[in-house]
Length: 252
Length: 252
Image (cartoon, rainbow over all chains, first blue to last red; front, side, top):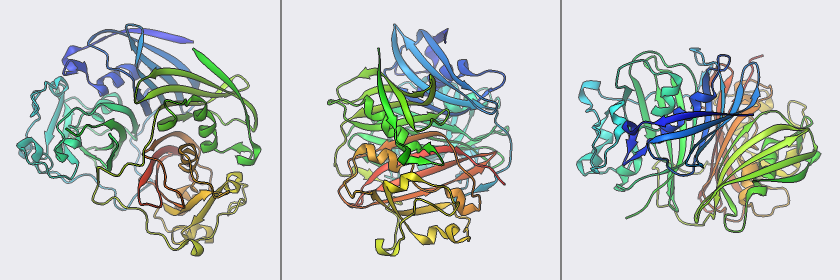
């Protein structure tokens, strides 16, 4: 049984007129949650075509409803066309300690926040990136030399992140943050747009209050496609998000 | 419009009576492919409940059909219940060279194949793992000391892999191989079953003929869930698969 919800896509979250992918993901996913399974645990989204700001519809189908985990299918559509298609599994996240973590797993080393400039809504490409009014990102400039015209060819970008209103990040906010870093292709001198084909987000726990640390990196660009991997760590040094997307790039 | 296909799940691929997750994924995904979009590029699967060997139904919905990429929704069901729910984007993979790869990206260092024993169909837990009749996996024993009762607490396992019939691996075979390593939890002394909740596979190119090298590792076990990341490299040192799954573990 499909349940439909009318939603209104906020132009304030748009990038070049098109709503931000993480914002679309949050908008879709929150309709699938319920009291028994309130938190996204793993979300897989395929982006079909960008909607415009304005009215849209979210359709939700519950696929199963277990004691620990429920799974749902969610579709965001506009003008009768599917725009974002999502599968998610959801349950109750915890603040549990790690049972085990890899020896080389650690939060990114960042300069103090006051030494990291806030990313402006109008960036180096001249494009308006509206979601930076909502997401407060302070970049480690050692990983953002591309903003000064000096790409380092490392394809790593990192910084501090929180909501613009300084409120604690909910699991739904983490979905937004998992897609909020500038493209790592900027550091390879590729200043074009990097549209997401697919994005999977693992939310591994509830984030502690305070600033988050985010690092995004690529492993391979080939044949017009790259992977971008994003990790988010909370103020208590807990890994709370592992996300990876396949996105398109274009060599000018 | 939904197209349905009758399929027969082969008991020869079963693990403890339940068909292997990678085999189910291949069985579902191959029904969505067409001549214009013949290769899976990114596949996201949520595993809802394990089917039994025997008759099942695969339902396919085409979500979009572009020049470079098509996207489809695929559902494998049995006895009227959805068992595996999949979203995929598919197109035409290449043998292109890397445009850029991360400085620390390299295939796993493995001993010669003749020094790596083949994984038997009946493993150290006494469970029958039928898919090892079809997937020829030669383990690097330095990463499989758990098989001798000596877990190393590294949660990394690597080895050589190819089809049992020595045929070249198709992109569909790569979906199987992306879920064919033993659980890395064995190396943490956890010998229980590790059911997949979600698996995303990026197929980054066509594999060159010959043996593949596969490495799987975990980054974090917490609250009953772990990530398992799998990379597959071909005989020409090209990264052809990046996969990650969220799976359950149980501390005895």
